[in-house]
Image (cartoon, rainbow, N blue to C red; front, side, top):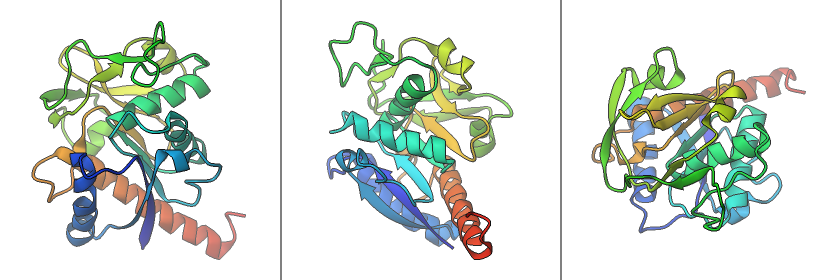
Amino acid sequence: MTARIALVGDRSPHVVSHTRVPRLIEALAVHDRLVLDAYWIPTEDAAREGAVRGFDAVWVVPGSPYRSEEGAVAAVRHARVAGVPFLGTCGGFQHALLEFARNVAGLADAAHAENDPGAEEPLLAPLACSLEGHEGAVLLAPGSLAHTVIGSDRSVERYSCRYGLARDEDALTAHGLRFSGRDEAGEPRVAELPGHPFFLATLFQPELSGDGSRPHPVIRALARAAVDHAARTRTDQLTGSGA
């Protein structure tokens, strides 16, 4: 079973995570027998109606500032509403929070300081200490999707990031978002959506794990969720139960 995955981001040979994605997809097929048919969708294209419809998974990849904040947010919203497996890493994490804040938590003025430097109280703001090029420990909540996927209470992860959640954490969690991974100072580093088939966002970049030849557990879990989604979709089409 082959699953179609939308890689939403502005592809560049200068973004290390982008250069690693093709190798990781190949490794998933070779080592895990998880076959992904990947399509890169620029954020400007993702803003169009139906741009990511029909895919078995959506991955909003790093590389912000994106050319279109609207496109990145629209891709997240589709995956959340349609129940399509979703992964957001680094900038994808940030825009997943932005989408949820605006469309679920009622924070219509939620802004990202990287995209809107004039915002008075942005939801996403520069971190007190930049994580660009750093490694750090992430503590995972027992029983969470992130904990199940990574298989440990603690993981050391790599970052290339300068922005994080600055406010309204309680408003987001009150509406169902769960921060299931935090750094040792208690700052949010992983978010997920209980009740969704697979919705995971990480401020760290699992693409940068190791030498890029073996997929990080988070990426492997997304691939498995995508293949499962493809199988269910095909079954529904054959039986007519999806009509």
